[in-house]
Length: 194
Image (tube, rainbow, N blue to C red; front, top):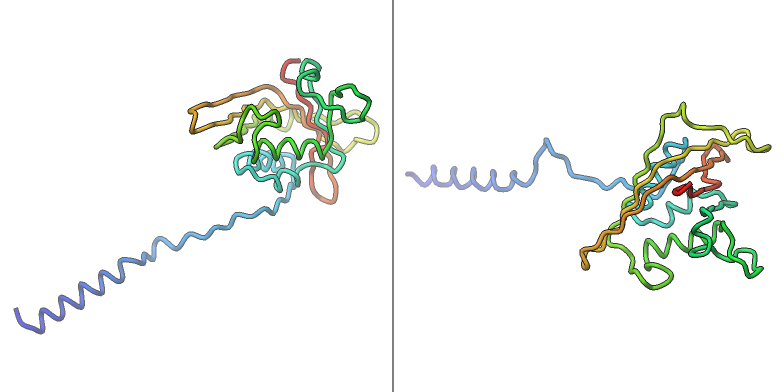
Protein backbone atom coordinates (compact mmCIF):
# COMPACT_ATOMS: atom_id res chain seq x y z
CA UNK A 1 0.00 0.00 0.00
CA UNK A 2 1.36 3.34 -0.92
CA UNK A 3 1.62 6.31 1.39
CA UNK A 4 -0.86 8.12 -0.83
CA UNK A 5 -3.46 5.34 -0.41
CA UNK A 6 -2.83 5.21 3.36
CA UNK A 7 -3.40 8.99 3.66
CA UNK A 8 -6.58 8.72 1.55
CA UNK A 9 -7.93 5.91 3.76
CA UNK A 10 -7.03 7.87 6.91
CA UNK A 11 -8.77 11.01 5.59
CA UNK A 12 -11.82 8.95 4.60
CA UNK A 13 -11.93 7.29 8.06
CA UNK A 14 -11.66 10.66 9.84
CA UNK A 15 -14.35 12.12 7.57
CA UNK A 16 -16.70 9.23 8.31
CA UNK A 17 -15.99 9.47 12.02
CA UNK A 18 -16.68 13.20 12.12
CA UNK A 19 -19.75 13.01 9.91
CA UNK A 20 -21.14 10.15 12.04
CA UNK A 21 -22.15 12.67 14.68
CA UNK A 22 -24.65 14.34 12.41
CA UNK A 23 -27.62 12.68 10.75
CA UNK A 24 -29.55 14.84 8.27
CA UNK A 25 -32.58 12.54 8.66
CA UNK A 26 -32.77 13.02 12.44
CA UNK A 27 -32.64 16.71 13.32
CA UNK A 28 -31.80 17.80 16.85
CA UNK A 29 -34.64 17.49 19.35
CA UNK A 30 -35.94 20.75 20.72
CA UNK A 31 -37.93 21.00 23.94
CA UNK A 32 -40.95 23.09 23.01
CA UNK A 33 -42.90 22.47 26.23
CA UNK A 34 -44.33 25.46 27.98
CA UNK A 35 -46.56 26.46 30.87
CA UNK A 36 -48.65 28.47 28.38
CA UNK A 37 -52.20 27.16 28.59
CA UNK A 38 -54.96 28.18 26.20
CA UNK A 39 -58.05 26.22 27.40
CA UNK A 40 -59.89 27.00 24.17
CA UNK A 41 -62.41 24.23 24.82
CA UNK A 42 -63.57 22.08 27.74
CA UNK A 43 -61.74 19.11 26.21
CA UNK A 44 -58.46 21.05 26.01
CA UNK A 45 -58.98 22.14 29.62
CA UNK A 46 -59.46 18.52 30.75
CA UNK A 47 -56.36 17.46 28.82
CA UNK A 48 -54.43 20.23 30.59
CA UNK A 49 -55.80 18.98 33.91
CA UNK A 50 -54.34 15.53 33.19
CA UNK A 51 -51.08 17.21 32.14
CA UNK A 52 -50.86 19.26 35.35
CA UNK A 53 -51.09 16.05 37.39
CA UNK A 54 -48.64 14.13 35.18
CA UNK A 55 -46.08 16.97 35.32
CA UNK A 56 -46.99 17.88 38.92
CA UNK A 57 -47.15 21.48 37.74
CA UNK A 58 -49.06 23.67 40.19
CA UNK A 59 -48.84 26.71 37.88
CA UNK A 60 -50.65 24.88 35.09
CA UNK A 61 -53.17 23.59 37.62
CA UNK A 62 -53.91 27.08 38.97
CA UNK A 63 -54.45 28.39 35.44
CA UNK A 64 -57.32 25.92 34.99
CA UNK A 65 -59.37 27.14 37.94
CA UNK A 66 -61.75 30.08 37.96
CA UNK A 67 -61.00 32.68 40.66
CA UNK A 68 -64.28 31.71 42.40
CA UNK A 69 -63.56 27.96 42.07
CA UNK A 70 -65.29 25.50 44.42
CA UNK A 71 -64.47 21.87 45.14
CA UNK A 72 -67.54 20.05 46.46
CA UNK A 73 -67.21 16.86 48.51
CA UNK A 74 -69.64 13.99 48.73
CA UNK A 75 -71.38 14.04 52.11
CA UNK A 76 -69.66 10.87 53.39
CA UNK A 77 -66.24 12.57 53.16
CA UNK A 78 -67.08 15.83 54.95
CA UNK A 79 -66.22 14.41 58.39
CA UNK A 80 -62.87 13.09 57.16
CA UNK A 81 -61.51 15.77 54.85
CA UNK A 82 -63.96 18.65 55.02
CA UNK A 83 -62.57 22.04 56.02
CA UNK A 84 -64.07 24.80 58.11
CA UNK A 85 -64.04 27.32 55.27
CA UNK A 86 -66.34 29.93 56.80
CA UNK A 87 -64.91 29.83 60.36
CA UNK A 88 -68.08 28.66 62.14
CA UNK A 89 -66.42 25.60 63.72
CA UNK A 90 -68.23 23.13 61.44
CA UNK A 91 -66.58 21.28 58.56
CA UNK A 92 -68.01 22.41 55.25
CA UNK A 93 -68.75 20.22 52.23
CA UNK A 94 -66.74 22.49 49.92
CA UNK A 95 -63.63 24.63 49.73
CA UNK A 96 -62.43 27.37 47.43
CA UNK A 97 -59.53 28.30 45.18
CA UNK A 98 -56.88 28.93 47.86
CA UNK A 99 -57.57 25.71 49.75
CA UNK A 100 -57.64 23.70 46.52
CA UNK A 101 -54.29 25.10 45.37
CA UNK A 102 -52.75 24.41 48.80
CA UNK A 103 -53.98 20.79 48.85
CA UNK A 104 -52.94 20.10 45.27
CA UNK A 105 -49.52 21.65 45.86
CA UNK A 106 -49.16 19.34 48.88
CA UNK A 107 -50.04 16.36 46.69
CA UNK A 108 -47.64 17.41 43.94
CA UNK A 109 -44.70 18.54 46.08
CA UNK A 110 -44.99 17.91 49.82
CA UNK A 111 -47.16 14.87 50.55
CA UNK A 112 -50.41 14.60 52.47
CA UNK A 113 -51.25 17.38 54.89
CA UNK A 114 -51.66 14.80 57.68
CA UNK A 115 -48.06 13.63 57.17
CA UNK A 116 -49.02 10.01 56.44
CA UNK A 117 -47.77 10.07 52.86
CA UNK A 118 -44.83 11.69 51.14
CA UNK A 119 -45.26 13.27 47.74
CA UNK A 120 -45.66 10.47 45.17
CA UNK A 121 -42.88 9.77 42.69
CA UNK A 122 -45.40 9.59 39.84
CA UNK A 123 -48.98 10.79 39.51
CA UNK A 124 -51.37 9.78 36.79
CA UNK A 125 -54.86 11.23 36.35
CA UNK A 126 -56.89 9.68 33.56
CA UNK A 127 -60.21 11.31 32.71
CA UNK A 128 -62.70 9.43 30.59
CA UNK A 129 -64.28 12.32 28.70
CA UNK A 130 -67.74 11.49 27.35
CA UNK A 131 -68.78 12.46 23.82
CA UNK A 132 -70.00 16.03 23.42
CA UNK A 133 -73.62 14.95 22.94
CA UNK A 134 -73.55 13.75 26.59
CA UNK A 135 -72.46 17.14 27.93
CA UNK A 136 -75.04 19.27 29.71
CA UNK A 137 -75.88 22.93 29.98
CA UNK A 138 -75.92 24.29 33.53
CA UNK A 139 -79.60 25.07 34.30
CA UNK A 140 -78.77 27.65 36.99
CA UNK A 141 -79.77 31.22 36.21
CA UNK A 142 -76.72 33.20 35.14
CA UNK A 143 -74.91 30.07 33.97
CA UNK A 144 -76.52 29.80 30.54
CA UNK A 145 -73.12 29.57 28.80
CA UNK A 146 -71.65 27.06 31.27
CA UNK A 147 -70.98 23.43 30.27
CA UNK A 148 -71.27 20.48 32.68
CA UNK A 149 -69.27 17.31 32.00
CA UNK A 150 -69.34 14.21 34.20
CA UNK A 151 -66.13 12.20 33.80
CA UNK A 152 -65.14 8.87 35.22
CA UNK A 153 -61.59 9.20 36.50
CA UNK A 154 -58.67 7.01 37.54
CA UNK A 155 -56.02 8.51 39.80
CA UNK A 156 -52.81 6.64 40.52
CA UNK A 157 -50.10 7.67 42.98
CA UNK A 158 -46.88 5.67 42.71
CA UNK A 159 -44.22 5.51 45.43
CA UNK A 160 -41.11 3.88 43.96
CA UNK A 161 -39.03 3.44 47.15
CA UNK A 162 -41.79 1.56 48.97
CA UNK A 163 -43.08 -0.12 45.79
CA UNK A 164 -46.57 1.16 46.61
CA UNK A 165 -49.34 2.32 44.33
CA UNK A 166 -52.48 4.02 45.61
CA UNK A 167 -55.39 4.00 43.17
CA UNK A 168 -58.63 5.92 43.35
CA UNK A 169 -61.47 6.17 40.91
CA UNK A 170 -64.94 7.52 40.62
CA UNK A 171 -66.93 10.27 38.98
CA UNK A 172 -66.11 13.96 38.88
CA UNK A 173 -68.68 16.44 37.61
CA UNK A 174 -66.99 19.55 36.19
CA UNK A 175 -68.79 22.85 35.71
CA UNK A 176 -66.95 24.93 33.11
CA UNK A 177 -67.45 28.60 32.51
CA UNK A 178 -66.08 30.71 29.69
CA UNK A 179 -64.22 33.95 30.46
CA UNK A 180 -62.11 36.06 28.10
CA UNK A 181 -62.12 33.44 25.30
CA UNK A 182 -60.94 30.67 27.67
CA UNK A 183 -62.64 27.98 29.71
CA UNK A 184 -62.17 27.53 33.46
CA UNK A 185 -63.28 24.99 36.03
CA UNK A 186 -65.80 26.81 38.22
CA UNK A 187 -66.97 23.77 40.21
CA UNK A 188 -65.44 20.32 40.64
CA UNK A 189 -68.01 18.11 42.31
CA UNK A 190 -67.00 14.68 43.60
CA UNK A 191 -69.78 12.23 42.79
CA UNK A 192 -67.78 9.07 43.33
CA UNK A 193 -70.26 7.32 45.61
CA UNK A 194 -73.54 8.88 44.55
